[in-house]
Length: 247
Image 1 (cartoon, one colour):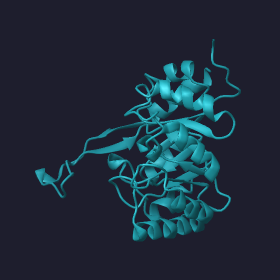
Image 2 (tube, helix red, strand yellow; image 1 turned 90 degrees about the vertical axis):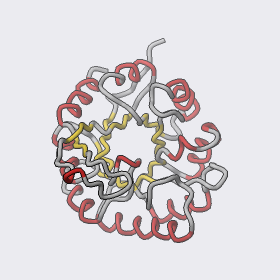
Image 3 (spheres, one colour; image 1 turned 135 degrees about the vertical axis):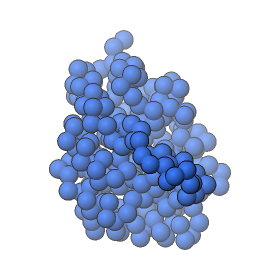
C-alpha cells in the first residue's frame, strides 16, 4: 500500500555555524537546527552564533547539550542547560532541541520536566538521546506525556536505513500525538526510499560536505583534532528540497 502524505514534507537542516544557517535558508530549508561540533553529535552553540543565525527568515531551533559523551547529566550540567535555555529564549530562538537519560538509559523525566518548563511555550524536539534509550516504544510514550513536540530519531540504529523498520513502527505508534522526524544519515540517495516507506511530515539532514583546510602544519590541537572541517552544501539542500517537492 502506498504511503499517504497530507502535504509536502518539511526540510530541517542541521548546521553548526551562521554561515551554514545562511546557506540552508537560502537554498530551500524550512527550518534550521543550530548546534556546534557536529562531529561529536552536537553541543550548545555560542551566543554569538545563535544571534547571527537568527537573522535568517526561517525558524531556528537551538540544540541545548552541555557536552559530548552521552546524555546522563549531573547537577551542574543540568543547571548549565537551564541557563542555556534562558539565554536561547532571550536571543529569540523559535524552538529548542534537547534530551537527557538516567543511569539506566531511560529518559530522565525529572530533569526533562524542569527543562521543558523552562522552555515555556516553545516547541521542543527530543533529540537522538531517544536512540540510546532502552525501549523505543516506552520512550515514545514518555516523550508524549512530557509534552515534546517531536522526536528526532534514526530508529535506534546508526542511520535511518538500518533503523527503517523501527521508524515504521514509531510512525504507527505515534499517530498524530507527536511528530516523528527521521534523522541520522539522511542523504539524497536514501531519501526516496524514506519517502516511499514512511508517511513523512518532516525530515532532518546535515547536508554537509568536507571543507579542505590547512591542517595546522600537521599539529593536532586536541585528542580528536585531525584538522577536518565540513560546510553546509547548498546543492545538497536544493536537491533535498526538490526530492520532497515530488512527493
